[in-house]
Length: 103
Image (tube, rainbow, N blue to C red; front, side):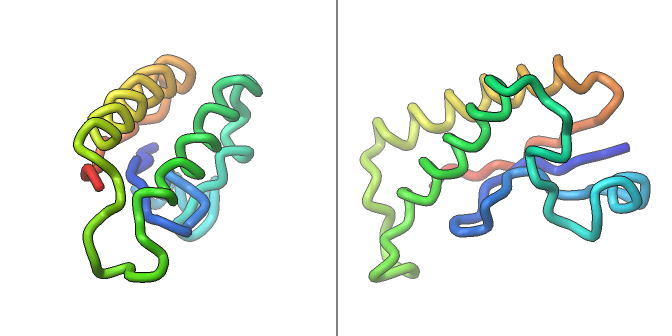
């Protein structure tokens, strides 16, 4: 089974079904963190990252530049990598592909 890991502002998720097995288990495409059966603290970290990523977009000018500084982008990227590493440890039977792009 394969999941894709990336952030899409406003989507409310950071995991996406990456193959037929994942779609059969989690649904068509977006995968809610709650469906993964995670430790509550790890799930909360993921939800916090999703909410934080939503701040990377200027909602008044979605096509414009991100309001984040370079330091904010770097900190988010580091936190997302650490979360992904912990997710891979928590779900060893699921391949999670990192498809993140810095905002």
